Image 1 (spheres, rainbow, N blue to C red):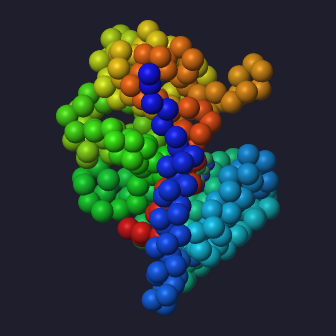
Image 2 (image 1 turned 120 degrees about the horizontal axis):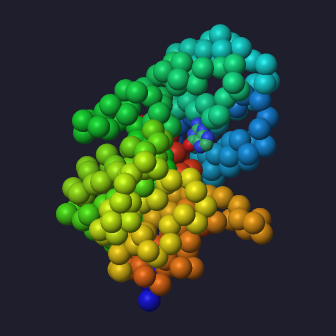
Length: 277
Ligand code: GUN
């Protein structure tokens, strides 16, 4: 029998711990405030932004919400970020991605003060992670580490394979697994002999962005499989990068989609808001 790693339960556990921490913080006269900026009205982004605001409310973090029109200029957005950087009461700044095409995403992420970079996307945050200094860590990979730790899965000394090399998931995931003393290999769409490499993994983290890409032929018997993907299949049902039905019977533990990695991203964002750098 395999263990299903319950991201919904674990994310709730983390949110409840944070809620207690914030209550204590407030009793000592402290507070936390997250500024959430959305440019345009992309429906998926609106759902994410709303969920982030709701999580803030649950935990007791104040949130400042900036819903800017699609035509907002880069200069206007930079000016708002500058303002928020300078506000002592704002502890975190989040610019929801993707941004409209006329705005240079990299320039915007660079403008956010690394002290308020709760998404962990600023090059200074990324650099700090890679050399083992304290700093904000990208929320989804940080959530994967919590899923493993809170499910009693040891990382130290394990063969960890990360499939995907994005700046937001794959690369920071590899750094975090390394920090936990895993032996880490990063694979991607151009990797040769992919099955040979994924087949060695004790812990396989899949973030390749292709629905049901991983079947049992990629997975070692008894592996732990973490699925970061989220897609809709032909029947409009949510699915991940892993073909759960085929892979699960060969695993020791596996995350489902939905209810695995997904809920952890917001929980870790809240963690970053509460704990700071
Ligand atoms: N868009 C999709 N995921 C994210 C995220 O984690 N942070 C931000 N800022 N935008 C996103």
